[in-house]
Structures are given as structure tokens and as C-alpha cells.
Amino acid sequence: MTLHDDRTAVLADRLSVVRHRIEVAAGSKAVPTLIVVTKFHPAADVLRLRTLGVADVGENRAQEAAAKALEVADPELRWHFIGQLQTNKAKSVAAYAQSVHSIDRASLVNALAKAMAVQQQTNGRANLECFIQLDLSEAYPGLADAEVANHSGRGGVAPSDIARLADLIAGTEGLDLAGVMAVAPLGVKPEPAFSLLAEASSALIANHPGATGISAGMSHDLEAAMAVGATHLRVGSDILGPRPPVL
Ligand SMILES: *Cc1c(COP(=O)(O)O)cnc(C)c1O
Image (cartoon, helix red, strand yellow):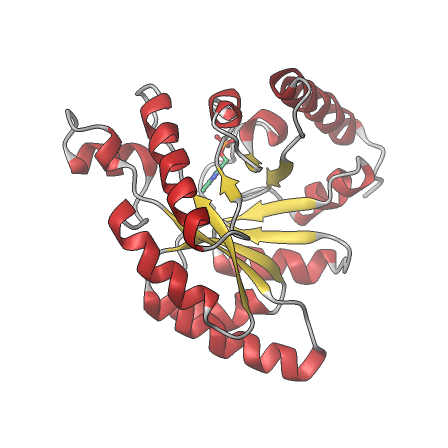
């Protein structure tokens, strides 16, 4: 593979469009971290993105992510795990990920803590950054829960359950509490979802002043997420193009 091929040129163009959108939306405010979501796309695309200055990539399937991280083998690249995570995959994720954005239960925190203890004894790696995923169905009282879940994928805790999970993460060796994360439902306006997320973030920061992260905003709603102070954007299809049919 040559890195300066047609595909690299396409990625470069789309990436610059997205970066421009982000700059426009930021105005004079700080520009959030752009995580390029490479799920379903090959490791070769991650390498291409590296040549374009991308430092953060996101993946949502444990097996695919582990294989890609091994193939890319770039210690400077930061891998963010953004999908539903089974506890039996915690060990694998702790071996390459700098952060997990989809923490939704105590058992996952405990599994990650165990995996991180082994990692840190072996190689002294930095703490794992943990975002608590928020379930946003409360933002859409008119919609049935099932319908919201259908539009935003499963996972996430109710706002009232964040505090307990946050205390657990903050009190766990090897884990850093980074903030909150959410996926706004498709097909409905994202604003109610993002205001609920912003409220949850303020409540979290009141007890954990360092947990200022807000992971929100995808290809179609990054501007709306930035309007409520998103610090980490997760953008896939507007940069990589449509996802190939499920492998
Ligand atoms: C796929 C995915 C994204 C990226 O979505 P796009 O619409 O392709 O930008 C962001 N966050 C999560 C959790 C995802 O699974």
C-alpha cells in the first residue's frame, strides 16, 4: 500500500471539511478533540489518517479494534473505545485503549480495574480515561424508550445513576474519571439530548471537578454538541465515507 494514494486524497478532503466545520462552530472557543471513528474500515485507513495528522481514533467493536491496534502498532496513536463493552473484553481493551467512552455499569468498572492493574504492573501504562455513557431517553418524554433505544443504540445509565458510578470510577486505582458521553438519537432533534447531557456534566463536575469531558457529536450533529460544550467529537462517516456492509 502506498499512503499517498487516491483513498488518502479522499480522506484528506473530507477531513479538511470536517475540521473546517469544527473551527467555524468553535469560533473563538477552544477546539474539541476530534476522534475519527474508523470502525468497519481497514487498518490501512488508520495509517492514511496518521499521515494526515489524526492522533485519535475510535472503535466500537472489541475484536476488530484489537486486531487493528496490533496491525497499526503506533504508540503515539490514541485509541478510544466507544461501543458497548462486555466484561470479558476488558483485558483486551486495556492493552491498547487510552479511553473507554461507554462505561455503563459497575461490573465493567471492576473488570477494567483488574485489567489495568495487570497492564500497569507489566508496562506502567497511564491510567485509563473513563467516560460514563448517559441514556438520553429522559430527554424525549414523548417517545417510547424502545424507540429512543432504536435510534441511539443501547447502553447508558439514567442521569440519576451517574453519581454512584462516578464515585466508583474516581475511587478505583488505574482509572481516571474523564466525564460523560452520549449518542443522540437519530431522526429527532439532538438539542434536548445534548441539554440533558450538559446538565449531567455540570452535576458531575460539582462532585468531581476534574471530570470535565463531554464526549458527544457525530457526523450529523457535531455543531449541536459543540453548542453545549462537547470536548470530544466522534466523527465517522463524514470522514471515512459510508461504512461497508457488515463484515
Ligand atoms: C459510529 C459511531 C460514531 C460515529 O458516527 P458517524 O455518524 O459515522 O459520524 C460515534 N459514536 C459512536 C458511539 C459510534 O458508534
